[in-house]
Amino acid sequence: MKWKKQQIIGLTLSFLIIIFYFFTNTISLPERLSLIEGKEQKISIKVPFTFEILCENGNNLLINGEKVQDFVKINLRNPVTIQSAKLGSYNLEWRLFGVIPVKKTKVEVIPQIEVVPGGHSIGVKLKPNGVIVVGTGPISDEKGKSYIPAKEAGIEMGDTILKANGIYVYSAEDLSTIINNDDDKVITLTIKRNGAIFDVNVKAMKNRAGIYQLGLWVRDITAGVGTLTFYHPATRIYAALGHIISDSDTGKIIEIGNGEIIRAKITSILPAKKNIPGEKRGVFVKEEEVIGNILENNNFGIFGQIYEPLENPYYAQIPVAPSSYVHPGKAEILTVVEGESIQRYEVEILRVYKQEAPSPKSMVIKITDPRLLTKTGGIVQGMSGSPIIQDGFLVGAITHVFVNDPAKGYGVFAEWMLKEIVKINENIP
Image (cartoon, rainbow, N blue to C red; front, side):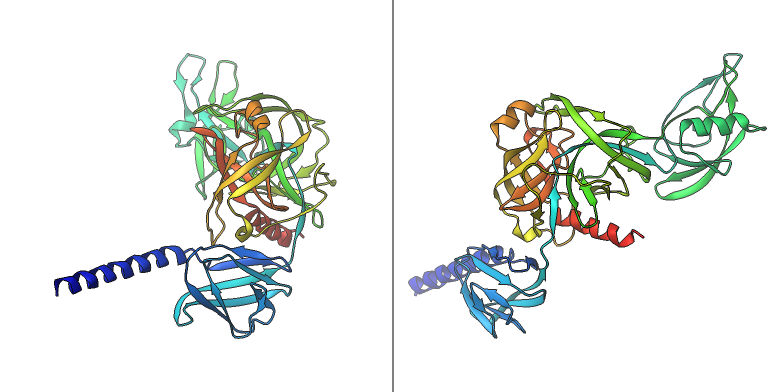
């Protein structure tokens, strides 16, 4: 009797272990799957169970090379391939042993979209709507007494000054002119802070040089060097950087008034070390020859229109991969580390995050190319936006470095950047 109880307990535990193993693995079955028209997509779950995949109107869908009439029987011990030559949507239902419903997957067959990959170094000039407050400071009057009128009025670092006395301001010079031309020297500033817009009255004070001031430090432009990710030749809309631009002093997101990109040349590299970020150091080339505008600054980078076509030395055009095509394994990046010459370097995609909705940290990558590691120490500032290519597809862009291990960093899916381009194109008159 005792032996039978032990046998029952053993069988029960074995069953529970199998169920636990099954559900912890099948949970990785995708809820959403994008297929490129005519291209094969592979799913590898490695679960030793037999499933039936059901799909209504699945005649145009091939699973492991078989047409889906009513269902297809598969074993998830082996990879599953899915393919369709016809655009459209399909709803798949995964049933264990053909009986137990486990998960539903929405499959979207999308057209192949090709872009020109980047890697080019670009100079970025971003001009906000108004001027950004980067600090406050005292004003000494003719008697040596100090005042900080802006701080006393409640103006904070990171505020954007949109108007002064109802007049739009675009530079520190605009603000100074309005202040010194005002008769009573009580200046009404229209401020934008965390999305809210309100007015503040500030009393201007005369300094020892006889100039009226508010005790403000402001910036009207942000400039730097980054990397172009790709551009869509039909619309000439580009994507770059892979992450949002924030003000270096305030940490606040810069809302674009207007902006432009120009050619840039890398003059030197400050290599990255553990806990010490590296940097590409560059200069603008032919600053008067603007190569594109900036229309958007968001979590996935900067976007705008290229005025003239740009060429890539390795790829004329390349298809953009849906996120479901990206997998751990070998890949390459395109970037510039000297002059304006784009080079290709080996990397490895270590981890891919399943993202049902756009998010900027989509994958973890590691620089493996000894040439790049010797030159830069890993991922450095200015490398953000460098395109990541895998299996002949543009799969993403470098975005951030791991400060404690600069050979590693995050990348964003190219699919999310492409979606931003589609939105921008819809809003262009």
